[in-house]
Length: 136
Image 1 (cartoon, rainbow, N blue to C red):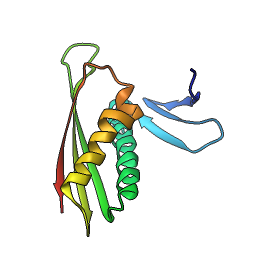
Image 2: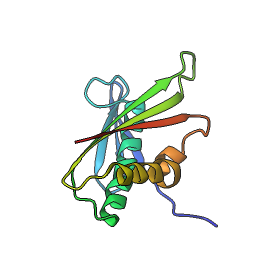
Image 3: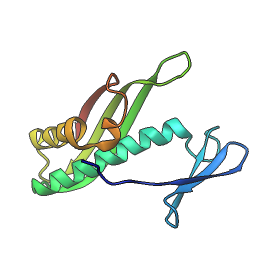
Image 4: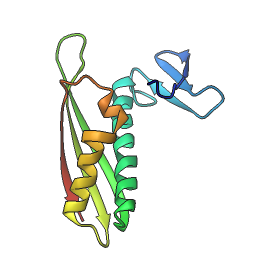
């Protein structure tokens, strides 16, 4: 069964800068030198964080958890030789809210990383994915 098809366009803007997005939609800048915008690997880490973050916000909302703030750090470890691909990801979820329960937040994060986050699941299956929680 075929799922949805997504399409983007990317245009070189000079030096190592590229701008892209869905045709006719909003765009983002990617700088392969990491000088004026995040580079491709940082953009990949941001995508994984945003994808998982959207899942966590949605799941906690369905659990009726009063979320006040969410900040996600993602550390990606790369191999030394080319291609310098990711070997592991480590997420740190910083969560604030009045009625934040560790068990519910842990469940939301695990559902995201193990089942729902399409960005994480689009990566090579041998990439280790870990997480930790910081509840305030």
